[in-house]
Image 1: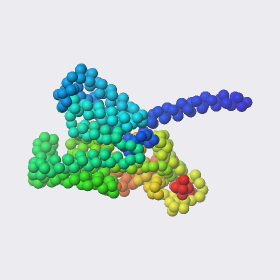
Image 2 (image 1 turned 90 degrees about the vertical axis):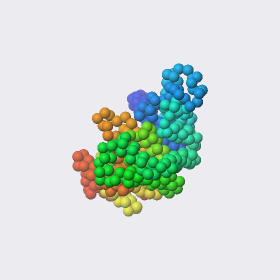
Image 3 (image 1 turned 90 degrees about the horizontal axis):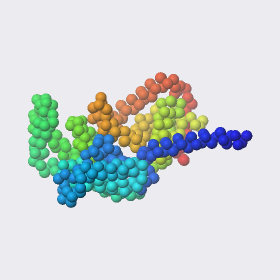
Image 4 (image 1 turned 180 degrees about the horizontal axis):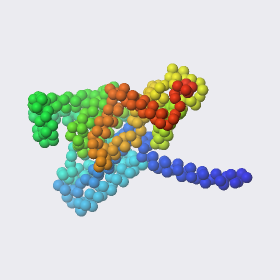
Length: 418
């Protein structure tokens, strides 16, 4: 009889093991922990690499035409040179996403971009040069060390941009914006605006607003306690440019926002999420996040797993979702936002959505506005209201029991002790 049980359970064990391996393979690109790079730096490198692939920028690598260095004129067939760069970039990108020798992969990716830039004046752009620098600096980082070179690179970019404008008479007078925006990109909109406001004072206002914003970002990214506000201001600044110009300026939008990850401290376990397991919507959220959480950094604890009430005065919160980390407690929509920000899938999905949107969905810039608004603390009340409304509607449609009918039980204190 024991032999029969063993024989029947063996196929089930094999199937479970197979599915476990498939899941591990599919979710490995989402893992940013346990490598030789800091988690935030590895995620930054993956986001920039994915942006190159999603936007098709990798297909534009140099054909060694009009090189900066004459050596590249003797590199043989331009087509072979180009496709060799593409193959090396894609191979290094795949290894990076599957966490194989990640520091070497970053150096190779940055090296491919550097070679492509040096071998063609036609390929050269500032945004591509910035990506090459960021990837090489990422490869020089190490686990357990602050990514100061990356941070200084971001500061240097904003300082150089601000000084370049400040020393330019056309920028100081507003003439640059009046011509660039009013004559080249949006003449009709500019005509409507200047019908209400004098042209040159308005252009001067926009020019000086840009200069001051970049100088504020320099100061913000130099002072650690200002990092959060600097990231918010920088995201708003680049999103405003995206909306106004309907352009990401090549890789600049993706690379600048991705490089802000160098200023972020990736959370360390244990991270406890306390949720209402009697709400189907929240249980669905839990299953999704557990599936993509390959590193196991989140511990999900149901409210009703113990009959004893919590001693943290949390009782049964109306938002039914809590995130506990480093002695802090985030509730409701604030907890949900943090779950997204600490999930690499959110960043990858954002890049793919902006980079390869379907033809019927051409207004990708408004996706950027929506994401920015969702994470803006000034609109947190609106996000919380929408979050509660969605939970309430899901509760009605799914037939979940009402919250007031449930016993107020929550094992939060035990989870924090663990």
